[in-house]
Length: 114
Length: 116
Image (cartoon, rainbow over all chains, first blue to last red; front, side, top):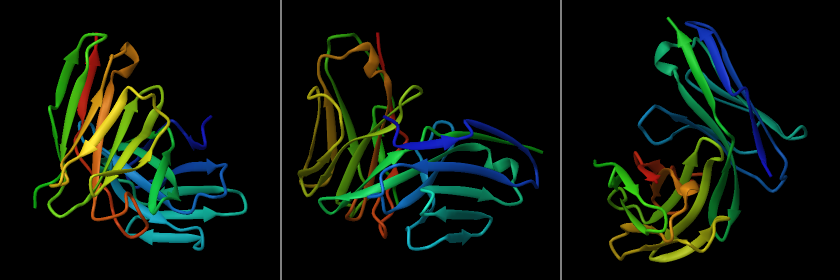
């Protein structure tokens, strides 16, 4: 059972364009939503995260939009650059025993053409 | 500041064998989590340790186990290896809670395990 659905699976954009990755979740108990960026041969790195009491969070060129009623959230990458080419994972975390345990989406492979 | 170190980086094992993977967290980090990454299932949480105690475990069979030492270093063990255990095993460390709201989890580069 896939609790976090991520789309699209792959995305190609031109330099300077906007990259949009969407995620949907089912469990309303999730209360922390991070996005990770992973380059080939590297482990994932936290990019940006949001809590459900906020509808939008922006850090530089990266923005998370969160729709609690629809149980959806998305990552927007403005002015996409070739260096942004990587795999992006959304996650939804639930607190269990004092720790936040993530459930990840399947990932989106982003390619930004120069 | 050194990052999360996982050893070995690559490993080839035969079906039925067992394997031990090692993770050295960032200095001062007390929480260590393990994840399995495969093309078919994506990233899946295995277990989390804090102060030498397993605090949470994902939905994996008992063949997958782990432990944490007093210096926060962690090992995970997989016994009776199956072909489907071939994956990238990632370790992440954080100051306290794993991937918590205010505590970032830092991932290592992973150990690529191939079972033949």
